Structure formats: structure tokens, C-alpha cells
Length: 512
Image 1 (spheres, rainbow, N blue to C red):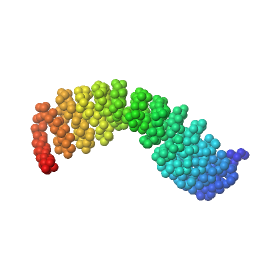
Image 2 (cartoon, helix red, strand yellow):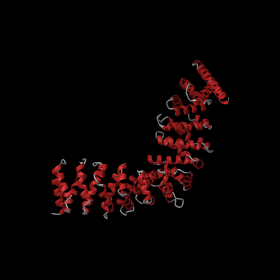
Image 3 (cartoon, rainbow, N blue to C red):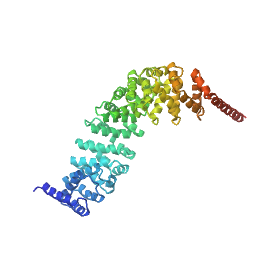
């Protein structure tokens, strides 16, 4: 009988005795694990491996103790099996990750990182990666000097080892304290070079780790030294990756780095815009969201706006709104981009593009509670102020008019309410718009009354200007007379005069 057959027979007997897991078999496991006989240790390691692969149960805390001896074993097979079983337990959530560290198992796990066996390296990296999901565990790994061997294994020629090592580094970069140590240990050039790995998982992990570090502005100088723009160029090239999560993460990293005008200028010079433009049509939601977020950052600086306001990109932004009008991230960022670009000399291109139609249509699909509605109404109000009303009116219909009037009346949502009323005010006077508004006279009166009594002066002023423009129409004038709107305006005038008198008195006292 072979040694493996002997182990298997023992395993079957022990498995029978330990179902459910009890204390007597635990003593047997302890005896085997702490034995100096490699064969007995292999039996214990094989049992744990079998249990991790076939029994989906939580491992009692007392069963962690034998792992210490098994991971410390001088026998390679014991190291391989025990480390693999621990990985399985951790991945299945059958062991408390913080308890593993508290029980003292982190030290032998990290020691195995320096094994010469690729399987042991792979398993110990996987253990470290899985443990590094909590802040306390990340700090424990850093304190136990676990970062240096991980950085070394990130350059391993074994793809499994490299993947798990870089995955562990990614999880560790979620801690700002560990970021500082990693940068001192030389992690940045290692991660930057790994972006060119042929393995897309390694590319993704390294890119995500760099994104975490780039979220902290203090590391930007080290990441983007003037003498070496390798990282920036490589990230921009990854935007064209055929793997969605890689191109998406490259967008995130570039967005985190794009904090200065100079860096943004370099990104534009490296042809980032055509690549981002192409990503807007991606079938991946994450890619679309990441690319539009980066475009939004770039659109905030005036020196990029003329370049961004090209007919092709504006066409794509309009189509993006029409295709994804229920996505609050796409809608919000796109509206912000259009508003930023409308402040440039190229606003006529925006007015003539599908952007206006796209913005109007999103109002019908956007929840009032969402921030994106504020961005959409704010953008439309800015365009209306700049002379886009004629183009806006051509897209107006009954559902859109009803939506605008309803939003104007929802004063609990302050900004969308004000901006919707501002859009209506700018479109008054156009024949088509007046016909549409007449179907909602009472609702318009209701929100105007609320505006005139609002505590904010801007609402009062908008209410007055809207009233003055609407009363030029005979139907509105008649309705206003019947609803005693003039009485409300007179009360407002009296309050204003009283305020002016008080102000004059206060100013006179100050002068004297």
C-alpha cells in the first residue's frame, strides 16, 4: 500500500469519527499536526484539505491551532496541503479572517512567502490577499514585514504566484498607512511595469492598486516625475484594452491623477480624448461610467473646453443621454460636461447638437430624489439663458411641459424646482410653448404663489418676472385676475418697501 493510500484510509476513518466535528478527533488532529513525523503531519494536512473542499461548514476556532504546526512543517507536501486548505476555508468564508491573525497564523503564512516552491508561494499569497480585506489585518501584515516579499513575488515568473501577490498588494493599498510604506519600499515602479503584463488580471490588479494610491495627492509627484511619463502613457494605452475592467480601471486611475491643469494638458497631448470618446460607446456600464467621469474632470478646465466641444464628441454625448437616460451616473456627469462646455465660445455647437434633446428627455426618466436631476435642470437653465430657447422649444411636447411644471412646483427639491421654473420663464413668448403652458395654468399659478412668498429673494424675483411675461397673454391675465395674484404682489411690494425703509434707517445710523 502506498503512503497516499494509507493517508486516504486514515482520512476516511477520521472523517467518519469527526462528523460532526467533535473534541476527541480534535485531539487526534493536534497529535498528528504537532508530530515530528512528516507522514503523520501529512495525514492531518490531508484531512484539513478534504474538509475544506467537501464540507461547507464554519471551522471552530479550536481547529485553527493545528494549522500553526502544519504551516511551520519542514515537509513540502504538508506546507502545500495546509496552505491550500486555509485558502479554501478563507475564500468560502468558513474562517473568521481577523481570528486567523489573532491566533498567530499570520507569521507562518508570511514566512511561506519566501518558500522556493511555487505552489506554496501561490497559496500563501492567496491567504495574504484574502486576509487583507480588513484595516486591522492590513496593518498587521504591514507590521509583520509582509510587504517586501509580496513586492518580490509580484515579479514572479509563475503567473499564479504573480496574480495573487499583486492581488494582495491591491487589497493592502486600501490602507493609507500601508500606501506610505509601499511607496517607500519601491512599489510604484513595480506596479507601473506590471501594467504591461500579458496577464489581464495582473494588469487590472496593478492598475487598481495605482488608482488607490493616486487617490492620495501627496503621491502624484512620485507617480508622475517630469523626467518619466511612462505611467501616464501606459495608462492611456490601457484605455484601448479589450478587457473592460482594465480599461475602466485605467480611466479611474487617470481621473485620480488629473488634479492639475498641467497633467490634464499632458493627457490631452497624449491623445486621451479619442480613446475616451470610443469608450462612451462601450457595452460595459463600468467602462461608460468611468470614461464619462474622466471627461467631466477634463471639461472643468477652460483650456480643455475648446478641444472637447467638437461636433463628434457632442454628438456622442447627446446619443449617450438618449440611450442611457435612466443611468444617474451617466446623466449627471454628461449634464455637467455640457454645462462646462456651454460656458466656452463653442456653445452654438452644443445648441445644434443632440445634447439639448438628450437633456430634455432625461427629465422624463430621472427620479426627483437623484442629484443627476439637479445637474440636468441646471444645464438646461444655463443653455436657455444663453439663447438656446428656440432650439429647446422645438423638442417640447405635453409630457415635457407637464414634467417641467411639476418640477417647478416641488419646492422641497430646491434647485430642480428653481431651475425648472427658470427654463419655463425663458421659453415664455414662443407660440408653441404658450399653447403647451395654457394646459397647466392652475399648476403654474400654484408654484408662482409659492415663489412669491418664498424666503429666498431669487425665487421671488423669478416669480415676478415669470408673472410679468405670462400676463401679456390674455388667457393668463384673466386667470391671474380671478386668482387674486395682484393682491399677493401688492403684499410683497409693501414688505419690500418696509425692508427698504429699515435699510435706509440702518444706513443713516451707520453714517452718523
